[in-house]
Structures are given as C-alpha cells and as structure tokens.
Image (tube, rainbow, N blue to C red; front, top):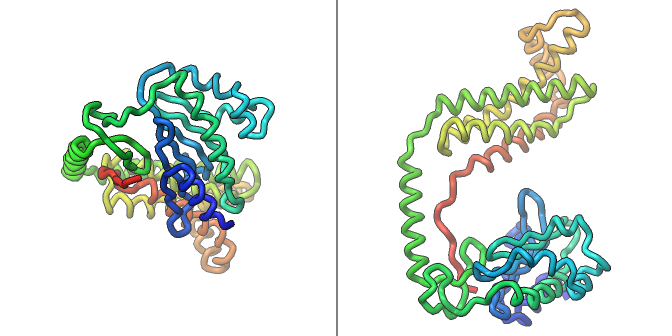
Length: 323
C-alpha cells in the first residue's frame, strides 16, 4: 500500500479527511472529530524542523495542567510508542496548553513517517482527556451559542467556529491589513540597521575563520537571518525596498567577512591591517580564480533566500476549509 493510501485509510476509519502534501511540500495531515475532540495527525515544518505529529484540540478550562503526568504514565501510550517508560527526550516533545495537546518527533524527508503509529498514539491519548477536560458540545467555541454541526480548518487548525464569528474575524483581519498598509516605513533606519547587522555578521565570520583557520561558508546563512531581522526592525514594515536591501546587504555581509579575513592574512605577513589593500587583493582573487569562492557564494545565496523568507509581509487573512 502506498504512503498516500495509508493516510487515506486512516481518514476513512476516523470518518475524517486527508489533506495530502502539495508539490514538494512536507505538510500533510488527517483531521477528524473524535469522541468530542478534534484530532489531527500529520507531518509539517515546525520551528524550522520537519516533524511527524499528533495534535488534539479540546475546549478551554478543566484541569489540563495535569494531563502531561497522566500521559507519560499511561500503559496504552507507552505501548503505542513502543517504550517501557516515557524518556526525558520524548517528554520535551509533549506540549500541553489550554485547548491543545501536541506531541511530535523529528521527521526526515528521506524516511517515510508511520501514519499508523501516529493514529495509534492519538487513539491512546483520547481516553485520557475526559478526566481532565471537557468535550466539544457542537456549539461555536468563540461565541458559545450558535450550533456548529461540522468543524472547519482555520489556517490549517481544526476548530468549531460559526459563520458569524468567522465573518467578524475576517472583517477584523481586513482592518488590520489596511492599518499595516497605511504605516510609514523607515528605509533610512532599515538601511542603517541592516548595514550594522551585515558588518557584525561579516566580522563574526572573519573572527571564526581566524580562530579555526578555516572558512565556514554555512555562516552566510546566519548573516542572512541577522540582516533580515535588523532591516525588519529598522524599517518597521516589510515592503519591496526592504526585501531588496536585505538581499543586497546579505551578500555585502558575506563579502565583508571575506575581506576582513584577507586583511588578517595580510597583517600576519606584513604586520599591517589594511582594509583597502585587502579589498583589492580579494577582488583580484575573485577575478583570477572565481571558482574558489563558489561554496562561499552558494551559501550566500542560500542565506539571501532565507533572509527573504524572514522578510515576507505579515499574513493577515485566514484560510478557512471544511473538514
């Protein structure tokens, strides 16, 4: 049975819906109302890392704070995990907050996840909830009065929300989007902050190279992120100019780091730290042997791409889908 067919089989068994990954994306899930709760299993990118997860939403209130202890001691949960006890490392992957139980494990794209194990784990979690939290009663969880026969996905998360509350939320999102669009950006401060971030990142690059005797091209990614946050903080708003500044300053930070390092090499031989000479020498190296810098500028481009992902405009409009 193919991977997609396994997810679809679980969706049928749960009387839910399977949302397959789109294109080369890692995010896929099965969502279903189960025993008065909203359960989801799937894979996604969370905090920059691919994870396979189980998520269960429940109404606010109750004694949800005691759920982690109950989960880590439950024999059915341990059997679903294939463990005799709940290791400390897995305990860190378990998050319980008001309204949500979340458990994940790192997921590497080259290894297929096991949807049956995720489903088994979700099934083991569910009987533990009634002793600590209530169940959804078929009413809107926002206003608490309008009946909602079926859940919806709001930005990918299942919820019981009525049409009136969804409309009110969408109107508020439109107002927030318009308010953001009317803000004035500060490109001068963004340029100043971004240039400072690029110089600090480039200097850190050079210092690391001096201390280790090696150039770590992957540091270019960190320079990109540093520059992006600096430009974003300085401008106060994301726009096309800020994105262009971020891309250029990321490349500039990497270039500056290389020049700083060349200046150190010159100083170690002549006793003089001379940045103009270092710049001239590095430009000559680029002209004579550009292939020696391929790795450096490959990671510079990766850093630039990552910095642009940080510099995306805030998303105000929610997506709503039926489960």
